[in-house]
Length: 108
Image (cartoon, rainbow, N blue to C red):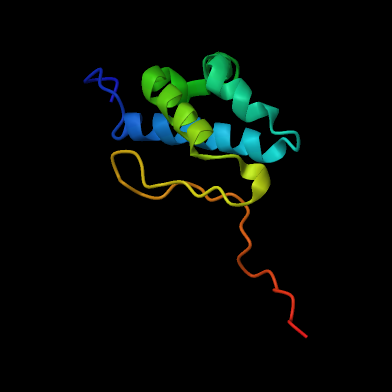
């Protein structure tokens, strides 16, 4: 790749997914829910600088878009946030903890 001075294949997709995953993991780990508001109010820019790494360096705007999309998808604390298909591949993003597999109370 260095011989052609070109970006790696799919660098924009990798950057988008990198931002999305970092934001979603941060929201999932926060029991207070403050991370989502932080990300929506400029926190994605700070996180890109602090922890974006090579994925963010390859395509900073796509990394930011992934982070912002994750912040807009929903609050993971309530266990009901499901990401809609996004990105150039149109795949469904990560899903926060859901009630799938949880036993329902038996009516008695």
